[in-house]
Length: 302
Image (cartoon, rainbow, N blue to C red; front, side, top):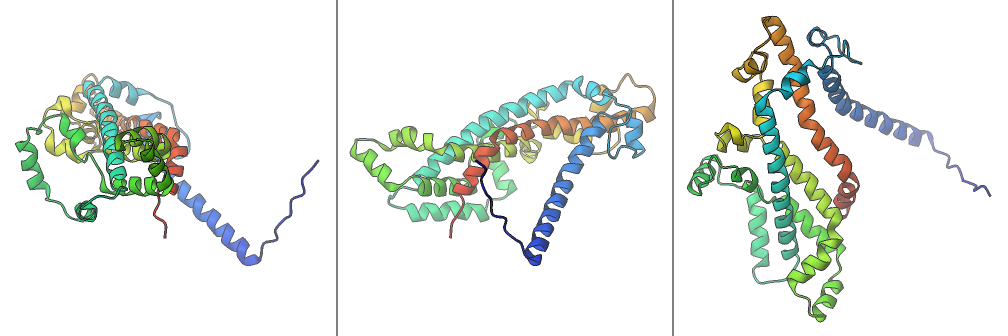
């Protein structure tokens, strides 16, 4: 049996409004996607064609020389492994601390208003770079991989999102019933709050993982050993200019022609961008369902 659908007749104004929205959305998608597409096809195109600006819609003279040179570079592999480690460990620590703080702020206790005010105060005011640097050296974290995990271990904005999510999604009656059954705060948090906060955890994982993966300043300021440097700092050396740096010279030492070296270096830059971007795109694709749901539920409501 066929269902009968009533067709809603749109006015001229509604049609113009809908068409304008579609055009703006299409333009926004084009602005975001096209640069990524250009980088992708340029990374597999002939360096000569890329330098001449001939790669616009599709790759020309497909070449993998950029990936071959990049994957031979030892520092890239070390930095890639460091960044993966910092991202995984740091994100786990971030999510645990944020959920614990968010849950604690939903409970009633003495001094709650002061702690809320203290959290919000740190969103607008900080000690500055020099006091933070001196503090890091005092704690013995300078040039230590731990600083990449502990720096920014908790975000006040994400704590607010977690608090709002837990407060709006978990009714107070659920907590009261658990307490009547002899449930402690820790058990209630582990057995009830965490299983019901999967959407929130998806949001926090995406936020924190992207932050750790793209972290550049922490490694630049607090890390001196090349063995501890994150990927972004190493990529900076490859993306600053077309000049051949020491690391690039090592990578391209067997290329005799200077002009060819410059063009291969240009191809390596695009390949480096692709390699550093793919993991985050994959992560967001996997967490998209939880991300959208968690943001909508945890949003502030008027």
